[in-house]
Every structure is written in structure tokens, then in C-alpha cells.
Image (cartoon, rainbow, N blue to C red; front, side, top):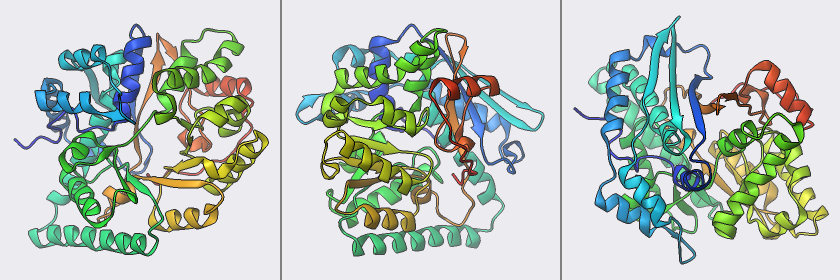
Length: 411
């Protein structure tokens, strides 16, 4: 059988950078992850057989890192320093994914992963890639051989158009972030290999997919995600001040472990306005830059520039990674708008690895509980919010959140 996931490296690099931090500091935390389909008018249970999904998930649980993969992870470094310690490497050698819970209930796909955080953390990308690929396999199965070839040709043509625009703008720097919602593994492999052949590494910086980075001799790219902020807030206790303080605790833990090399801060877990109030002037000076993942990217960039100026930092020395629902038009627009004012780079996801003529889905797997406490993510777009309504309202109050932006997620 041709499995969708054939290697535990077929995931995003930030699962390992976060994984080491969690392994060393929070391995006693119990978490629950839950799948969510934000494309509300697509009923996945009509396209994906439960038996097929179970088989793929079961197969992932049989996988182990082989010697070549472990050697690659051990050799990953940032500016000459070994990034991953031997304690963490030895854990990966014997790591087992915890069980999953799957049900088709009331026409909905219910998928959850519960266990120790340092093991459960790896399920997210595998689950998303599997569900996405099974969905598109279902769509392709209804097409004739000729029509399937047209799909591939359409994907190649659209990729060629993107490449043309990027070659006309050689100072645009970008990275493949498309693993979680790719059309399938083979197509992402083709896209990454093509981009690596068409662009120098100064423009195409690499891929978040560790297996493809290893295969094509590219940089594995990524830092951290919302779950760090969400879980630490969840386990901070009942006091509002402790919950609020947990946000900067994440930044301190991250800097302590990785320093400047991976110092890109994700800003929107509890709203970027709070982030800019919470990050200290010293952190603003030390950290390399910021990642924007929701809301209005132009407005965010302007706030970031203003923030750095107030902190006495030249914005031209800092960087923004834009990573929210990008297409080539948005990338060019943002690049031109901020050129010469702040460095920009682009984490390009779904539209890069899943643009073959089918509608892209907005699927996520997020932490929803930690040590039996419900978790919250606010975002700069409330369509991306996670949490029970009463918890969301409490977190809005704790973090001084006043935004009302609600824009349905394309992907």
C-alpha cells in the first residue's frame, strides 16, 4: 500500500524546535489536540472513508526514525552550534506517538490526540497532511485519466506563473510552508524540487518540511507556533496576572534555549496589540523579528515599524515573516509596501503546494486542553479563535483584547 506518511521527518521543522523545549521543560504536561474543519460547507465524512483514515493514522504510529534520519536531525545546526541535544535525540530514537480518538459523529469528522505533550506534539502535521490528501484523492478518483492529467498540467502552469513573477522580483525572499495543507506529498516534493532548481538559496530559503529539506539539500525552516503560548497560559493557574505573565515566559524560555538564531516571535496568539505591549525594549533589540499569521498584514507591519521606533530600534535591522494565507499577489504587494523600511520574508503555504484547480480547505489541529484546563487562542482574526465562549471572553479581558475583525479563512 502507498502510505501518505512514510517518514516521521515528513513534518514541519518547528515540531522539533518546540519539541525539544517541551521535552526539557514541560514533559509532565498532559495535553489534548483536536482537529477542526474551518471550511464549514465541506462535509469531510462524505469524501473520506473512516476505514481509510484509520489505516493511515495507524500506519503513522508504526513509524520510527531510522539512522539516517537521526543523523540528519543531530547535524541540524544554527550558526555552527548543534541545535538539538543528545538527550532529545535519544528520546526521538524511542519516541512513540500516543493513541488517537476518531469518530464520525453527526456528519462530522471528530479527531483528537491526547497524551504527554512531548509525544503528542508530533501528531498535528501528520494528521492534517493525511486528511487533506485523502480528501483530494477522493476528488481525483471521480475524474477520468485525461482529466487527472489536466489537473497536473494546471498545477504546473500555475507554478510557472508564480516563478515568472518571482524572477521579476528577485529580492523577494520566501520559504515553503505548505506541508499541512498540501495537495499530496508528491506534489509538494515536485514544487520544492522545482523551486530549488529555479532560485538561489538567497531567494528560496528552503522548506519547513524536514524530509524534503534533507532530500533536496535545503535549509529546514521554522521556529515556533501558537501552542506554546496557549499551553503555558493554560497551566499558569487561576490568577489573571499569572496567565498574562505566561506570554512573556514563552519568549524567555525560547531565548534561553535558542538565542538569536531562532528568535522570530509569533505575535497573535492573544492579539498582536497585547504582544507589542508585552515585548520589552530589550527583547525588541535582541530578537531577530516577528511572524504575522492573522489580521491585516499591512496594518500589522505598520504597527511593527512603529513599535521598533518607540523602542529605539531601527526597523530596517529587523524582519517580518508574513505567513497568513499568502498568494503571489499579496507577496508582491507586501514586499513593495515595506521595501526599504523593514526586512520581509514570506512563509508560503497552501497556495504554493495546493493550487491545482481544486478548492483549498482550511483545516487545523490545535491544542484545546492542558492538564485538563481548556485552552484559548484569540488571533487577530476571530475566525481563527479557539476556545469555549466563556474562556474566550475571559482571555479578552486578561489580555486587553478589543479587536472585532472576523474574516472567514480561505485556507
